[in-house]
Length: 336
Ligand code: TRP
Image (tube, rainbow, N blue to C red; front, side):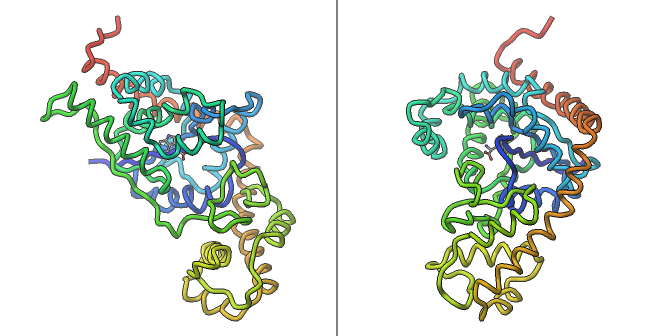
């Protein structure tokens, strides 16, 4: 028996930030030795809201380089581009035809994003989770590491798999394997620098709300200097009335690799003027090696291309096998 498999992905829309690293990528790095990892750039998902064609390919490559710069090891992981593997879109169509419309209309993320888009809601935004189900089920992963906000999409993925198995399979020989969600702890969530109650996000219009993984030291310093705090002296974790304080302490704890008790003791009598330089130094020190590695990778496009070509070949072999199984179960003729 080989190692259990995990699969996850990030949409290549805009620059990756500390929330992406501390909440997702670092976790993949921490567990990669114990799993066979499939990590991809969800560039088909990236066009469910209006996008800039001039940036899509470059953003996709940048995310791949960032996976590597953050420590994803090709000995344990396959990195690939979603759109390089047509099986994703093909399986998504087949799933579309067995997914009840009301399952999709109930998705919280769809409702939220649809409100944001106003008049401009595409059918793709609605069927986004069906494509996500295809992304996942093609690779028969054991676990899918994602944030809390994706939990509903994973439940839908399991529901689609169970429905297809029920409608077209045999109980003793299911067509699709149901994956387990691996939801990261709420504490791993990095919040916005300008509003401690909201997640740090690529789509926040203010760049001051996030620290991007490629921000130079002076930019990091500026953003932390300007970030939202409160007028209270003495910095404490877990005060529901001080979400910014909790977030910044949490960030400092993770970036400086200290325990919560150690940070609580160190900061309990501090004011913000004393704390901010510590947080700034910890952020710069964490990001420096990642940035150096990123720039080295980007300086050699041939290398990145070879990584993605190899990733595509490995991933496509698995994806095509699952797709064939589903097509046969649905009654399609075998290709000539
Ligand atoms: N929807 C995910 C997000 O926005 C990205 C994604 C697409 C994904 N397909 C996936 C994550 C498959 C895990 C598995 O974060």
